Length: 143
Image (cartoon, rainbow, N blue to C red; front, side, top):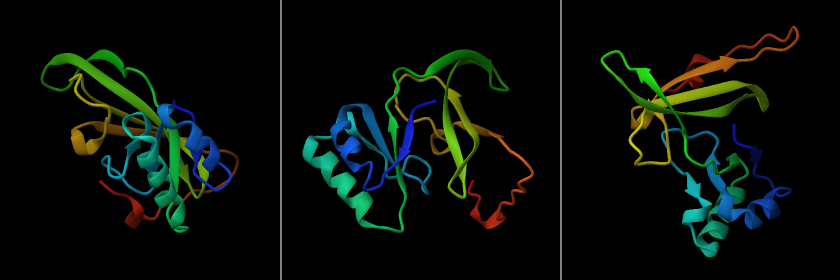
């Protein structure tokens, strides 16, 4: 799982200097929207993306370490066997770690983003600690 940190005024310097090894993501988006790859951006483009991300106090962004090649493995997709790739990501609820999201898709070797909008399947392992009761507002869940 990649190192992930919330973009705040306190982490902005690390995000600026880590451009070549980081990915900037809006926390409330999905389907690859709003993702900026540092290694594909010029220093000026990266700096501008970070400035936009921190300018809106209501929006939450995270930075993640850029990973190398995805984990690939053979799997049956319901019709045939083939190589698949997977990625793991942290899942947060009310600002706290709540589990891990797994996304997997047929390996194409063509892209850096594995998500449902691009045909991947997703599942989650939810972690519950203590006697804390977790409720999820059905209106906040997106398909």
